[in-house]
Image (tube, rainbow, N blue to C red; front, side):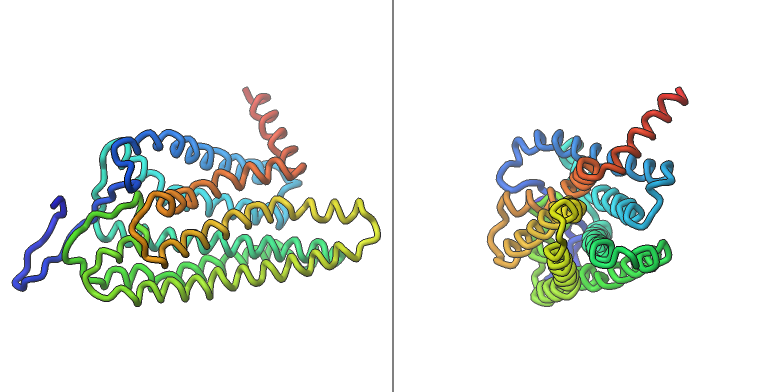
Length: 319
């Protein structure tokens, strides 16, 4: 067995590191997947940095709606960087070993940033609700101060809320195998190696998902229900189309984000043997939203496209 195992005075053993094997069932050729994953990672970093630079340089974009998009870009960069460098190191340098503290830290970071992304989507839904349902009051309700307070709340909520996940995982007794059929440290994947009862971990993750993301989804659905009712009351078809178009990009990203979360949760809770699809979905969920979000917003937002052009023209003039 390839595990690094420490002996003790008792008959039990405690492992000191985990070994991430990569994608189940395709170990012999999984390195070929590193290239599309690397391209996705580079596009995610590049596109989100471009959005941050554009918002910073263009005064017309320095308003709450685009500040939220900038915050989402920071979260996306953080989420992708939490996982992708290690995944690429596994494929390119066979760096499969990860220490227990690093593994538990990765569990914490993934849960924290995914929760923050969910929270930012909720803030965006509230922003669109006020803009469409209460347009005259929008400047007085959605202010830069409100965005700052909401951001601090999301950081504190998710930073503190997910602490029990890695703490409970660290308290399990890992006394036998240390090989994980995964590219990253997922909570349920790691605790499946525990020799003692791991039900507290599963229950904790389920409760946090329902209370945290479940609450966000419920409020997002409520916001868009009120938006739809407000749009249906508009007499102008052109006004209705314009109002809905401002929400379409947001809805596309929300649908992908939460659908993938549900699929991953169901496959893990089913406690089936590790298979390629849920592991691949888990990895893609940490890299596709960060690379997809800027593209969707750039294609759907005229003001942002104009901001990109200003940045590129400014860069050409400086040369």
